[in-house]
Length: 409
Image (tube, rainbow, N blue to C red):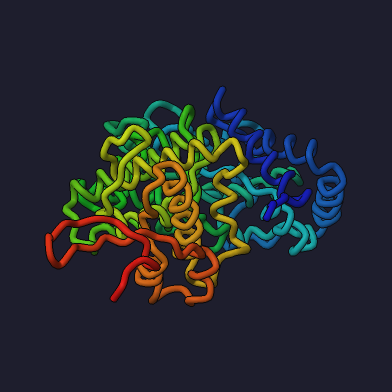
């Protein structure tokens, strides 16, 4: 199944990409800069939003009792910024076009100070500042030239820039809720930051983060020269399942890293799929003890053989999407469905390459997938019946391979 992006999604992605491109030169972005990008990408939507906001300016604002509007700050003078850092700890996220326009249109362009509460801004010892929350609200106000109430706090003078970013990330994580929902990749990175501040080096997310760093992988795709890995939740699930299989911590780390490398080296350049990783890990747990050899007759393990299979079949168009193929997955059994396709094709490839026997017989396939997939589905992939069978002569004890059809009971 080929998945195509809608025009709206393409535009949304382009807006985010433009922000990261700008941040690579200067991570401190002003609201006016984001508005200029929105105006360029969404001219009609932007014009309508601007017209709605300006129409409501003459109606006045809902200002919290006791506040003086003259004390509010103008968001257009460039002193309020967001720190869209590409460093490991990122205290801000790219602005989201859909979220911004929804805020404006849902309110019919009427900005309410009473509802917004104010813009949260952190002042750092190095003189920089970061509006660590309420950025879309700030964009809304800036669109109409509306002054805003700014809630500031100053970091301790002894803190480094990285420590300031960590503290702001923690504040955002605890406060966030009413604005744009945080994705799993951003949540993972914030959880890692929090765990590291507590020196919890053995916590699962910290170990996984270490593995990703070693392999130059990033769940958000924002780290320069790192490949993006999609589906961070599935990666965590696979890691925990290895631990349940009674592997030690070091063995679990080694298998996780090796499994990721199989995919990275087999399918270079493209994003790494945690869904494929999950299926390979599941397969490894089922068949890793099968004795295997390569084309030269040298002993290899399952992951080494699987990498050879992927690389040799890549020119035929058998890429990550070919194997993941969500349209062919049974609901709630995605990793088993993907594993079935992988093992079946690898099984035939191995048989044709080595020419002796299939590593997985149909009977063995049913044992592997019996609790997860229906027999009719297993049989559709493991069709062949000419598997060799190891038998022992009752008279001379000689062990040899024969086809099941030649065995006389």
